[in-house]
Amino acid sequence: MAFDVKGFRTHDFMFNPSGAAGANLSKHSYVSNDDVAAIETAGYFDTIYGRLKKGDHIDMVLDLDATPIRRAYIVTASASTGVTIAAQNVL
Image (cartoon, rainbow, N blue to C red; front, side):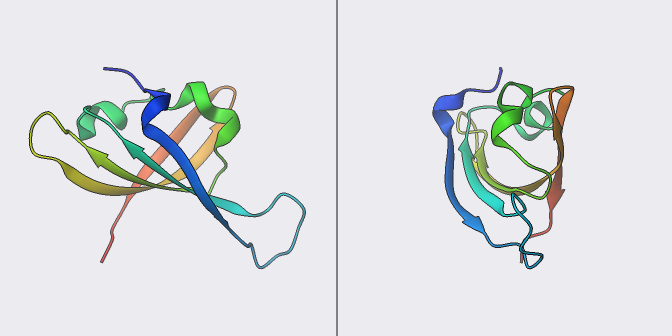
């Protein structure tokens, strides 16, 4: 499938210790019927690049059609040329 903005929400932000203007990072959630392979495909989040910043956190619940799983990701790049994410280990 494709990214569906209805499943995406920004919840909060985290202060960046640098104190620099625009340096704060955001916490987002995303719920989707898509599986891990789909959301990790290049270009999946490109349509919302303006809402994402390098270092933002995205907590996801995926694969609702099968066995739902929870994954945590961090945005590693976000620009008009594309958004990339990386899976994080959550303890």
